[in-house]
Image (cartoon, rainbow, N blue to C red; front, side, top):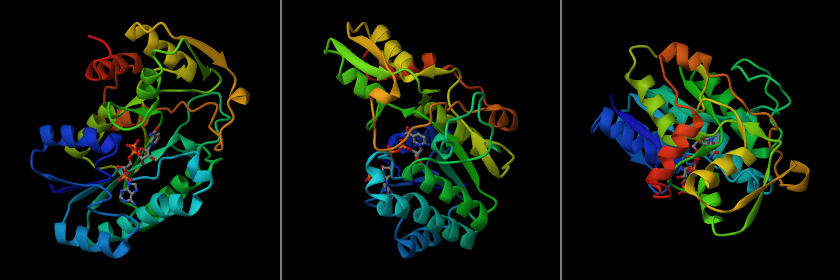
Length: 285
Ligand SMILES: NC(=O)c1ccc[n+]([C@@H]2O[C@H](COP(=O)([O-])OP(=O)(O)OC[C@H]3O[C@@H](n4cnc5c(N)ncnc54)[C@H](OP(=O)(O)O)[C@@H]3O)[C@@H](O)[C@H]2O)c1
């Protein structure tokens, strides 16, 4: 196996570096934007061909969801055109692609967990570009696997957990209570990806992966502050009181039965994984 990880310095890319080195030591090449810009089709083609990879895991993405509303061209270049470049290069050498997508492909109007085949209807520039990538990838490289995830956090980069920890010395923080979903610890997602790579079967298609359980951003913030012993009071507010340029899905719970059944993956509850991350961040003992 010879694996290429693109976007390797992002939250997921960094966790994958640890997990893949444990499970498949020396078998992966880790490239971030400085090494390989996925919007440069010639560079992607040359890099992939020279590397003769068996698998490409695309963790590269434009993830500034609100900024994307005014930078739609750049967002599309990375999230859509970049994925097309990877798909074309992979197909040329027969490499398998595992790509990461998002709950933002849904509009969030559902009341029960989203299955992989449920109707998509992205409501933000970011969501539209991620959906375009899904369609393009399945057209150009139908043997690919797409893993949709949501509410990603880790000890690295920017995320909700680190934002809340940075607010731990303030007396009060307002957080929306009417957006419901499931946090995803990037380490758990990286382990799930490694399980797919290590399994005897590669079953193309779309899969959903988050941690287990359901919560709101408000409850997630409560869990972070109460677990770390911070005195910060969390004030529940409706989304209407916290307008953002990009619309978020109100309901973003993903049904994970398919990935659990196909790859025999056991997924930790979000609270258990939150504690693991907080320990790594030295926020709890
Ligand atoms: N974060 C979430 O809450 C969330 C939720 C659902 C799905 N996802 C998806 O999960 C995946 C991983 O997300 P993440 O949170 O790990 O993202 P992240 O931390 O923002 O990392 C993305 C990485 O992509 C790199 N990148 C950006 N433009 C690039 C380009 N043109 N060529 C190559 N690399 C480029 C970035 O490098 P630079 O820093 O050098 O630009 C960065 O290291 C993405 O597909 C994302 O859409 C994320």
